[in-house]
Length: 92
Image (cartoon, rainbow, N blue to C red; front, side, top):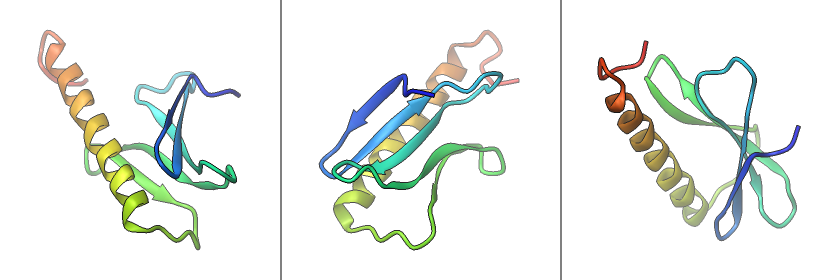
């Protein structure tokens, strides 16, 4: 399976994958230089937002964490905006 969208930051890369029958987006997060998997970003229905799920034993500095935070914030904002465009103003 190949990524349909790739977003590069200073040290990390977000790779969006299309998963059949899935209503929300899914991204793999990896180290940009070594392509080591750091975790995934996917919809967490209990909190009704996208969240970052790390791989055990991964270490982050403030630059990487800030990039992940900004990415999550933007994806949650886009998701809410998309929902508001729907006729009933919310996701079913």
